[in-house]
Structure formats: C-alpha cells, structure tokens
Image (tube, rainbow, N blue to C red; front, top):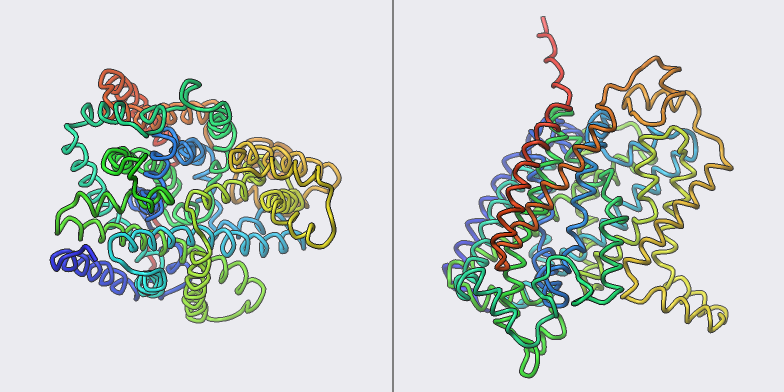
Length: 605
C-alpha cells in the first residue's frame, strides 16, 4: 500500500462528486429509452466529442502506451495513432449520415438499410457480435489494466479490484444512462489530462526538460534502438515492423472510417448534423494529440528510472505494462498520488460506463425489444436496460480474469473487425450492397481472426497435414499481426463482392426508404432518380479536401509536439505552424459544409 491519508481523501472526494452527478441525472434518464441511451438527441458538439475522447482515455491506454515505448520506442504507438485518419473520414463522409439516420444504435441502421429475413438475422447477429463479444473484450482489457494499476499502487488482488471498480461504475451507469455518462466524461477528461500532464511534468523536470530527457535516452544502455523515432526507419526497425507500419497507415485506418459503437452513439445524441460533424473533428484532435504525449513522456522516463539489463525489475521485464503505475509510485508525492489514482478511476469509469451503456443499448433495442418483447412500456425497457448493464459488467469481469496482455487485446479487435471495414464504408454510398454481403464479410472476419483456434479444435478431432499446421503457425505468428489483418481485410472484401455478384439487390421499397431518410451521395443514381431527391451534401472533392487538411492538422500537431518533446525544436515549431494553418482551414470547411440546424417547432397553441 503506497497511498497516504491525504491520497485517500482526494480519491473519496472525486468518487463522491461523480456519483452525485450520476444520481442527480437519474430522473432525466428514466423518462424514455431515447433519453437513457442517446440523451434525447440534445448534446452539443464539444460535450459529445469530449465524451468520446474521454472514453479513449481508459486505464488501458496509458499502460499500453508506455509499454509500447519500452518495447519498440515512440513509433510503436502507431498501433493506435493510425485511427485518426479513420476518424477524419468519419468527420467528413459519415457523421452527418449517422445523425440523419435518426436511429438509437448502429445495429438499427441494418434494418433501415436492408430488408427481409437477412436484415433481421444480420441485425440480431451484429448486436451480439458488437454489443456482447467485441464489447466484452474491450471492457476486459480495460479491467485488466485497472487490475495491474491496483496491484502496483494499492496492493489489491484482481478479485478485489474488479469488485470495487465494477460496482462503482455500475451505480451511476445503471441510474443515469447517457446523460450521466457524458457529463461525468467531461469531468473525467479534465481530471485525466491534469493527472497525466502532472506526471509528465515531473518526469521532464527530473531530467532537465525535453532536451535533457532526449539526450539521456539516447545515451542510456538497454533501450530500444531508435527509441525517440516518431516513425519506424530501416536503420532502427526490422523490415516486418516497417511493413506493419505501412499496413496501418495505408490500409487498416479504414476500419475506423464509418464509425460505430459508442462513437456512433454520441453522434446520434447530438442536436443536429453540424454538431455531429464538429464533435467528430474535436474527438480526432483531442483523442489523438492531447491525450497521447503525457503518456509517452512517462514511458520514456521509465526507460531511465527503471532501466533494463542486469538488475532490472523482474516484474517489469515480464510485463512492461506495469511501467506507468510504477512511475506514479516512484515519482509522485503524497496527494498527487491520490490525484493519479482518482484520474485512473476516472478513466476506468469513463470507458466502462460508455461501453456498458452502449452494449446494453444493443441488447435491449436490437435483441430484446426487436425479437423478444416488442410491445411494452418505456419504463419496462429502461428497467431491462439496467439489467443488461449489470449482466455485461459481470461478463466483462470474467473476460478480464482470462486476459494477460492489453496490447494483444487491441490487435485481436483489429483483426476481428478488419474484414468488415470496406463493406461498412460502401453500404452508405453504394446501393448494390446487400445484407448477404455484410453477413459474408462479418462471418469471414470472425473465422479468419480465430483461424488458429479453429484449426486447433479441428486438429483435436482429425489429424491435419504437418505442412498446413506449419504454414498456419507462421501466418498467425505475433510478428505477422498487422499483415494478417490486411490479408483478412482483402480476403473478406473479395468474398462479399463475390456474394453480391450472385445475390439479388435489396428491394426498391427498402432502398427508397433508406435513401429518403439518409440522402446519401455516391453511387445511388438509380434510386435518387426514382425518388426525385438530390443529395445536398458537399461534392466529393470538397470532402476529400477536408479529409486531407484534417490529416495535416491532426498528424502535424501530433508529430510537432513529438519533435518538441524529443529535443527537435526547429522541426516541431515548423510542423505546428503548418498544422495550425491546416486546422483553421479544416474547421472552416467542416463548419461551412455542415447544414444549419433545423428551425424550432412552432409553439403549441
């Protein structure tokens, strides 16, 4: 136990504040399922975007970020930086479509876009796939991170940590729904940033500022080659690492392009299309740039405070994900340690309440309400939602109990969703995509992502050729993770295109219904002509310009701050100047292209 009385006072005050917010919003959330899950579609852009970014600041992110620095160097964090490009595609191509769809969950879009029995099957399967399976894995690694954090700083075992944290998150998620989630997310984002910046500042002060820390890392033995490299280079990274980097930035970013899950849920909850576009843009910047560098500074500092080689801490050698909480224990004084425990608790609850609320929306809206009990009162469905939240929390705790590595969980989700990346993008912009195509892509992705496990099961039943097992072992080796994800993406894309070739399109009635509500651009000419509705979205050239400027803005900021913090001030200032100019143009373009809010309804006589 490393916390003092003042530390526990800070933690208790923070916990009391968040609980009071959640319980205070319980009355508003209990009015209807729409109020519970999407806050009555009334969120402003800054609150919706901050809520998404706060969910990214989970307990897993600082631990995994610092571990990537220890294993590979700064450039290892492209494992999650690459997603900013997908978020920018969401901003300019999909955010307004999500808001226009007027649905409660992204799975509900399925029966808007497709029709008949295939759509019903896909909606139910997608709800279980997203809300139960994928969601449990994500919450599992978040809980695993909290277990590791508590082990270092509190001396708690896994069972105690999971019981306390899940119980606290459940109290106000069950009570307050999305309103409680987003309001506490705002508090948690501010608290999380304050705590992580404080630790980074202590690290920089200890080693003489950014230049001093960078020089110490360069001269230190037993650090990764090119630990300060912002991108992998042939001089300091293997050819397979460089290839994996290219897979991320050239192909796999498409996974995030249409947005889904809790990101889409926040966009549903905004006041209008303009608010959804600006929320997505703010999230791209806040989630990628603001949150990142304090964690990386702590990771670099850990290379100096806890060096490898002879005499290295055996626990840290076995699990580099312990580095971040060990830095808190080593460097932060009493009071500030309590602040960091409170911010980690904030990060944990921010992510857990989001995923619990989002997953329960699938279980209730897309499974229970759709297939089990179709006609009931709103109060009944709100009660069912709260029961679903509790069940999901228990399932996630079980998954966390089985997991060992946060990074491996990240990579598994990349593979699991790679196969549906392209079909999810094109279903909005091409009328010919049908439900069977999406079913094929999803099934193919699940099978290929779990191929090693499935082959092991088959091998237990019947002997398999040694050559097949050897080739499978090479294909599913850890160093092939991201290359394998690209193979899954390409294979599943070819599969669903083949399925389209041999299956019928959706009915005219289904296509007309979707087109009239969402009004997409792209390859909808036959449907648009039939409906007499023209797309009012900006031309594709302007959306691609916004995407390119946004990438320059976000990645210029990311790399500019990185140069400043790794002792390359000149390059950092130049990159930041370019990113500021690009950012101004990006915001103007996004704001100009977003439609004005609808007029208020006339007063009731």
